[in-house]
Length: 457
Image (cartoon, rainbow, N blue to C red; front, top):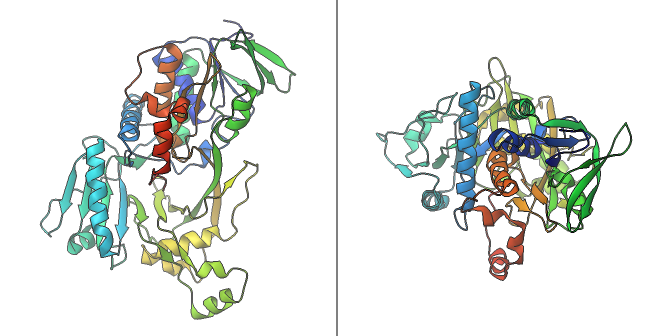
């Protein structure tokens, strides 16, 4: 082992890069892996996550569900071996609607999820139905699949804090959240115990010889230096396109800016035991008559328009924490990544007003908005919102990227797949769905034109 050589150099110490280092070193036995970043680990985008996970994904095909099931299996293994140091739970994702016409769609989605491998559908359409609520903590011995609840008395019994006109719920069960920072640091320490070196620096060039990777040049406080290596993994998050260009590869990626808002729910509007809760209907924000008139005459009149479905939130933290996180993906404009990020100054209020449609107790905050913190990062994604894991056109170069808004939940499954590519092991059946070469397939290009739901919340 030398500081001037490595078996593999990984560009990026976010959750993707750390997971890649962990799987290569801990699970595949590579003893000389270098992880490079000019920033501290998990500090560019990974620490901006809402830290949730789900095996609830649409088609086409079952590749995404299969990959996520694998990733969740790996997360649960890590939780068991660490004593659940990253506090993984399985509270589920709870979709709610007040629109009776949406109920058949809930049932279709649950049947599709079952067919794709997410687990069975259980319909609860009468008061005596044996619906099993999720526990606050832990994940062992919990059901998978989907519960669809259409009995109004059952909804009120278990979720009385939702708006009274809720007519149906869809509870996806192999879903929940965990501490992304604790997970990432646990994997990083395990990887370092196996010889992974974390190097501060910026990848400035990737050298090739005879058409394959031969070295990586880094820039940093100590000046330029080169690490000789036969393998390079690009795991650069929102900076991935720039890293691809170092190899002469134009990657089919783009970035979207996404935010979340956190505030102290001092009134206890959202129960601390709540699942991740998503409103499945479009929303018009609640305003007083005076506010409505003022907005109509201002440059902010768009706030009177209908917003898309999907406002969601969950409680955050344990013990005495009163923090609630809210997220609403109503702006998905493509943009070049720039730091520091700037967010809509009205985002926090918009999310709170939208969430109050589903959780009426939140309206108590609208006359005097709580102090809130808005942050976020970039979703780096492909057109159909499926990540890239596998070889690049330059021999010895690999990519682990485009993890979009699901990086923490998918990172172990994606890195497990990437490590199989790097070490030449047998690949799982879903591997082709995440290779860059899929875009060279005319049949796949035709599929893209009629793709439909990309699974983004």
